[in-house]
Image (cartoon, one colour):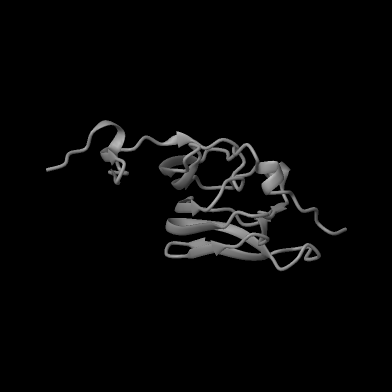
Length: 159
């Protein structure tokens, strides 16, 4: 019978990783105020590939840095909202001055292709915070990735 070992690890061998995520420690998520992360799987270079993100109520980006929008050049990202809510804005093009507000809620699934323009605007903030399972096929779509500035360029708003 397998038992939980250090920091939630049940098995960690070349052919199997099995974690008790309840036992994993939450870590600070650089660049997102108050957010925490639990990394479940890593790319060979050590960067997070599959991870849980907890965001507290409010906005993950300080209001003085809003609005903010960007896209990812080559990375696809996937997300499944486990609990809570997260207001987020989606844009059809760089010419769209105000995005379409989407409140990500429990049960929402997202597959974001490279080039998909998204961001945050002043307005509704999460009253509950949220817990989201993220996974991605490359790096650069999170602020603490070494290639974030190149992979996820900011897109200015039209005047």
